[in-house]
Structure formats: C-alpha cells, structure tokens
Length: 64
Image (cartoon, rainbow, N blue to C red; front, side, top):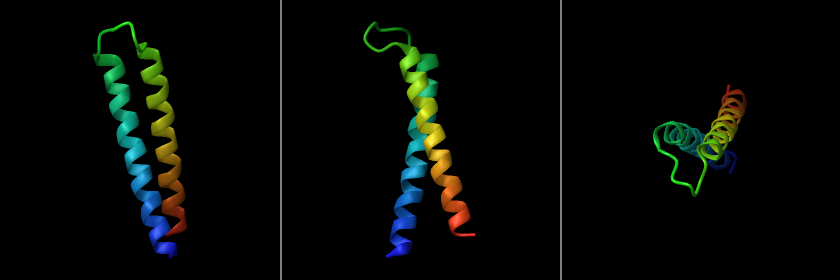
C-alpha cells in the first residue's frame, strides 16, 4: 500500500515538472494571442515546476 502511494507521488512529481517546464517554454515561444497572457503561462509553469520539485524531494527523502 505504501509503495503504491510513493509510486503515485513520483508520477505526479514528474508530470508536474514536465508540464511546468513545457509551459515555461511555451510562455517564451508563443506570440501573444490575446486570450492567455504569457505571464500567466510563465507563472503557472513556475508553480508547477516548484510543486513537482517539492514532491520529488519529499519522495527522495522518504525512500532514502
């Protein structure tokens, strides 16, 4: 049971990091379309990357 919870936490951490990095890149590469400001994409990307990093650090120290 605990191993399943740790695996889910690792998957969520990796997903959040990948989505965050993708949105950070998209915020810098996509021209302003007028619907979503690039600063919103960058802010969400930073939050997702930070959340994923926290999950990953927590996972690392739980399984050390």
